[in-house]
Length: 484
Image (cartoon, rainbow, N blue to C red; front, side):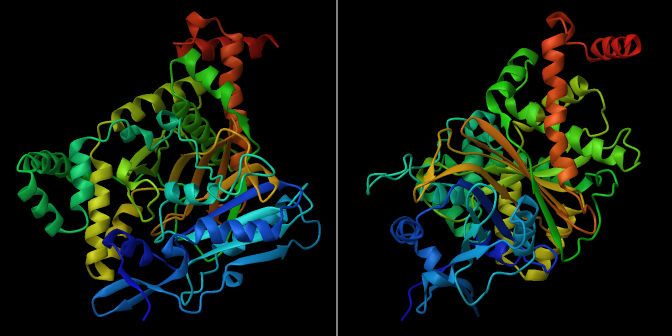
């Protein structure tokens, strides 16, 4: 009889979150130099990935809920596939290939993942991955995929490489990673069931104080969430259709980003988010839309994994709502405003609240879950995530990984996902949109580097004593343009 494991309430919520116009799939692309050794890749998957039972299990529902059940007919060939791009085999065709996968459900009768080895005319092959979000969150899946890689073309058979997370402080989810408060840890333990919480109290009476503090903080966050107005109406908001579009940027040098942030007294995160906000605002302006005072709210995943969760799958993250000041044209003013907003999120109980809400939703009727998700989604325009990857070159079955990208799914009626990934001292941006709302996402991601370039030029050209005054810098720029 197949082995069976009860699915956690949070993972159940992600499984049931699928809608025809928003599938809960995490997609990734790794551009390679040259061709990989397919037989070696297959061995790596068997040795390093399939050791996790979840990748050999299907999701099944019965009267007691959802469970993970071993797939007795599991065949790796159903999940590891070859493909070739038609025609030119260029970036546009690869983006279309990924967009088609984003709009196509994974077969529910099989384990919910696929890896495609795609032949391109872009200097090498591409690895295209897709995993249903109910298997694990982005942090866990990046660890699994990077675990298939090696740090040399011909590695030792026992060599395993995990992602280098030394840049936690620069990542969005690093807001609560250092440290995770005891109250938030209490939320993680309590989110699955009230039984867990009661057992914590019996073993450790002091834990009740954590829950009391958590309750007060989360009550305040819930009140804020209930009265939070929807963000600005823009062409980015609306009911998504069935067809997606994806795009990715050329990489930006991480050392330059850090240098600019150091001069301006801002974090790497502030610089990246400000550049994204500027690119979104520039797109709206190019389309002839008003941007003055426009605010776009993004749902940002926050990692709530503890040290004991290392190597485990499943979903262990909450969300915070971040308002991007896309209506501020002055790049310095926008950067400083973004930094202030990020500071305000550091003590937020929103991650604990949303994790607990997802767990509760997963235990309740699906219709209640959908109403909760619609309520949250109506308050936001995008999902945005930032994952630190390895900061040294990696090789997949002998082929060097040149650039990695990934795209996050959007829940409810959210029609945009922004992904930031660092790798080998470079940062790249991925964007997934609904074709009906934003048919040309490349126009947005291509502007991110331009927006960062504005900050870089200010740092290079303006006197350091002026950089703290955005209005003064703007006046200087206007004067220089007038003289030119």
